[in-house]
Amino acid sequence: MAITQILLLLVLGLVSYFAYWFRKRMNTWQDLGIACDKPNYLLGNLVGMRKTRSFADIGRSTYSKFKGTGPFCGFYWFHRPAVFVLETSLAKAVLIKEFNKFTDRGFYTNPDDDPLSGHLFALDGHKWRAMRNKLSPTFTSGKMKQMFPTVTRVAAELVNVYNEAVNGERRSTLEVRDSLGRYTTDVIGSCAFGIDCNSLKNPNDPFRQMGRRVFTDQRHGPLALALIILFPKLSRRLHIKITPDHITDFYMRIVRENIAYREANNIKRHDFFDMLMDLKNNKMMKSEDGQAMMNITVEELAAQAFVFMVAGFETSSTTMGFALYELAQREDLQQRARQEVVEVLQKHNGEFTYECMNEMVYLNQVISETLRKHTILPLLVRECLEDYQVPDQPKYEIKKGTLVIIPAVGIHYDEDYYPNPEEFNPDHFTPEKVALRDSIEWLPFGDGPRNCVGLRFGLMQTRVGLAYLLKNFKFSVSEKTQIPIKYSKESFVSMAEGDIYLSVEKLAA
Image (tube, rainbow, N blue to C red; front, side, top):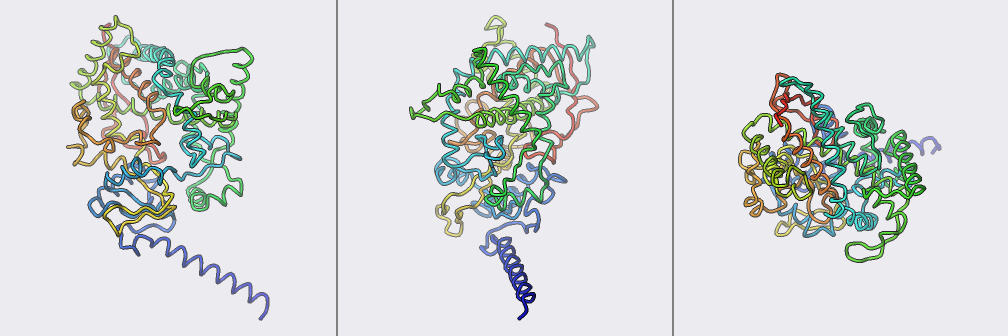
């Protein structure tokens, strides 16, 4: 037989085997008799992603369609079979009770070639545990209190920006999303990078512009991302990066310059960057459980500062924008929140102290309800590290290596947990109701050992910003307000598609 014929047979054999393997893979759940939607051969069950459906849409529709069919239904994350959780008991097992079997998120990282990808949110295994132990002490109440004056200073500047925008008029229609993003950018720019970028006064500040590009500039298209997800080990061997080079260069330069400046001038700002530098310089060598820890590298420091910025400025500003959007439609709820802010500040002689935040109970309810109705991270993802049999459900086993998707947005809109879920109702989160509710039924920050490490900081800047705005301004809908609001199809997190216009009226002092 000629060599050409042999090669042709080998190619045909390989193609046939791959086709068989691929077809079997895309029929995983059907063959097991577990409910699932028929997958698309390119996108799996993510059809419409970045075009016609947001991730929140995908999560809600799948949850509502298959709830009641079992503890989970089948799902295809591109070409990868995944478990889509339908019962809170299983969600609790994954996030808390059986956490050691589901510690990883299964996201692609390549810190050697792409240093900014080596951040806490994406790290897995012992690398995640080590970094979590190092960072947890930097987010205590004491550390938040040290950064609190920075937050209030920027919030006061936010009020000045709104005063100038209203410009003496009784009422003006303003776009609030961008100004709120500049507020959180200035807070985190200072706390995470030690930069007084002041984008509230200068919307074109490079730090602000680059922060926005993190969410818009993609290194790869959907097909390339699918291949990276499907073959992560091969992608690392091929030195494939996911962060665009201009973003890496920008943040690495800022970090190196900041370190050099602070060390040369012996500067201490008591911010997040200071704490990271202490870790780099071997000055914080004990975790919360007293274990000794190795210091971190400059690249690791940059990655943690980067994710603090990415996770903090967009999520908090988006939450504030959605809260104002909802309160603008309900003047009674807005006035109740405003009155509480005024009364608490009067008790403290007009000074906004760190302790004030805990006294603003109703404002905290407003934020919690906003995070329920507008779930910023609609899907929580974990990877199964060893075979897991769902108790009392012999048909339902989660195999090692399987992705597990917990639809926080689906749970948040489940009438069994939140009556009339489409209605904005802060009374869902009265102290009495929260005490009776299982924590797994409210998941904006995840739950268990891998919940959001920076939730205290995120809530702090959100509370302060909203309190300052509600004290000084009244918000209502205008003819330009988009009702109902739509989510961006481009982003994994739930953010508004386009601008948020509200009518803003300055209140008498």
